[in-house]
Amino acid sequence: LHNYFTLSTDYRIIPALISSRKDINDFKPVIAEGKEAERILKKYEDLSKKIR
Image (cartoon, rainbow, N blue to C red; front, side, top):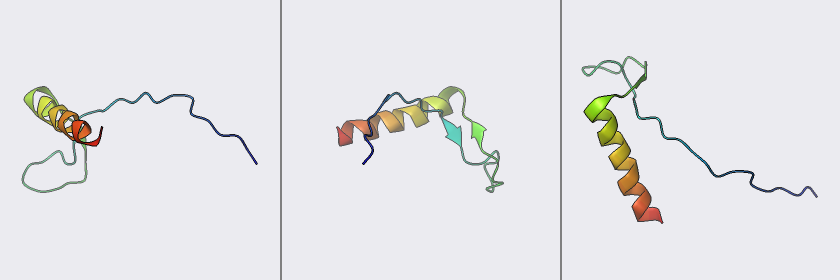
């Protein structure tokens, strides 16, 4: 058997939108900026509090 162990638990959330367009999904994700990025990061923060 092999011995497995975790080297790191660091992570980085990159706020992104699943589409570059708002009217349809063009399947071209883009990095969110400004208020939109803050909204996405807040959502992850709130969700992570629920699973701790």
